Image (cartoon, rainbow, N blue to C red):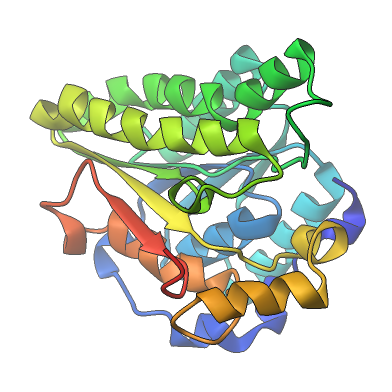
Length: 269
């Protein structure tokens, strides 16, 4: 991921329509992959609510530019930590660092993912393991890292970002689809495991969100039009379309919602 994948979140006026969730003010939030793509919009959205945001990002340059813009807009500068979530120890150290600065994590968003296209024939064991180590394994170990602090507080919200790709049975990236299907199962299991401690675990399931990386690598006129033809709502999805639902899942507005998938894909599924 290079600097040309920087998502200029505030160039899209959608942030002005975000509802206010006053209970999120002052909350400690950690986001994986919070420096670009959907994660960049989530970082900005929680900062706009007055939350204290920290994130881990693979690439430093887009993350720094995002933090500059968020600080200029909100007065709150997120803590950006450069690191690779495939290294569990690195990711957990980042979570610990943010918790030391902001207090125990109240809200964890497992957002980071990589939707590398591939076929059954051209994929190796190493490719499979690398994809799972990016798209699935970090979700569990990030949850493990925050669970202790949430238990002590008697509350917490974990949001696992899934994908409608497995609901639709999309071709072109079977390992990614498998990982996102597994996230749905893990979300339900963690909701059962952690619910007695007041910790809620839900999955936010986006459709095809046209981030800068998607537009650079995968989006073309034909595929976008095919997607729109399958959606009930005939508009492309942007990052701010994911921000409102994420805020809802993190807030007390969804206080009795856990173990669920919230699909936001324009009615494609």
